[in-house]
Image 1 (cartoon, rainbow, N blue to C red):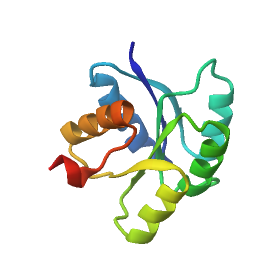
Image 2: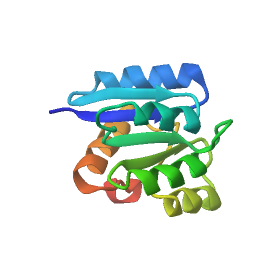
Image 3: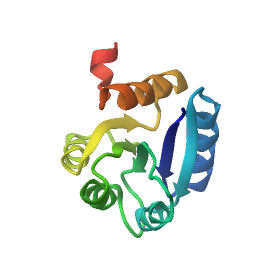
Length: 133
């Protein structure tokens, strides 16, 4: 059984490229894509089962990652949420963790590290890059 993934990112090229990359990993399927948090939540409500893991861009238009994570945590507490950002500042990281994310990944992550992170998140419930080195 494959791990299902949702992605929300307001940069279409990044969203599609990330989807293709994750789809190439064994045992992972992209279930839903959206360009903002509001659309993501609406699409998830139409699914028979929500994704196992959702990658959320921190800075999106309409509904940002923090607001999306807060709503998803409240409505779907079993989904593992992962913040995805170019920002590496403490405030962004802390806010996303407080909103319910179990990991904070930088968009510059190596594809091998992303695959490891997704496996760790699915199997352990979190990913800590510092523990993995």
